[in-house]
Amino acid sequence: MSDEACVFSLVTEPWIPVMWRDGATERLGLAETLRRAHQVRGIVAGDPGAGRLSAGTPANVRLTQRDAGGRG
Image (cartoon, rainbow, N blue to C red; front, side):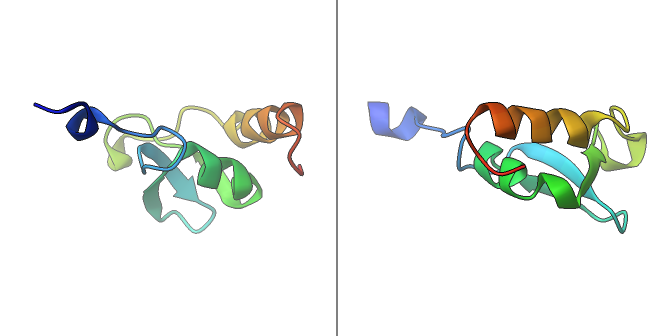
């Protein structure tokens, strides 16, 4: 197996299960999650039907984005 076959970018590849304000769910990469944090209701824990981690998660993502030098 080549090294290239094992590459997965946490920054760009969709892996974070987010819930939008309208209740729809989608997986995003870290960069997109931070860019769109103001539109995210929460991060989905496990199965999308299982609920959100917390109501404060989008605020935490925004704070992380500010710390990284982004808008927030």
